[in-house]
Length: 219
Ligand code: DC
Image (cartoon, rainbow, N blue to C red):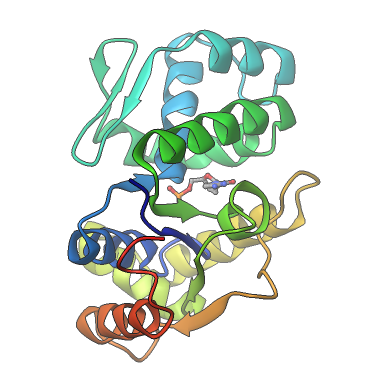
């Protein structure tokens, strides 16, 4: 049995996870948040007292960590890290871990294994349509203005909108200028700007796109 592979890429805070989860549920397929995998490795790096900028040491952690990135919970070396991977410490170090080419190869291999095992699914990240699954059935690039993304984050987690906007712009800069797999838009991707759309409208637009391509009923 195999189903569609749906790749969702885009910058932080654009609504990828909300869209990805809802689309996976509508299609009855699995959902993988690859950002959570980079965050889980970062959590292990910090917990083991390793400098996130030390490429060799970080790669060693990535190769030896036991992690389960599930739809509900993330467990790292036997510890429930579901909320800590979203915390300030991990968030401020994750860009260094995501820029590590060895870590990227390990995680890309794990992501391909996840899809192969399930015969498809919704996979969300930064390089999914460009690098991980260039042959995905549908590629989406979900985006929104830095201001709107900052407002959404602050509404969820509190804080100052101007500061949040500045940190989002900085993280975008790091993610799009790094040497390995920078965030970029695949030529075949459908771009969805969620700045002025509610989540229901975005999910409806994606499901319409899936149906238009008839990728929802398996291949
Ligand atoms: O989507 P997120 O904020 O949880 O992602 C965390 C970090 O991981 C962010 O710096 C981008 C990076 N990332 C990546 O480089 N490639 C992916 N496929 C997913 C996330």
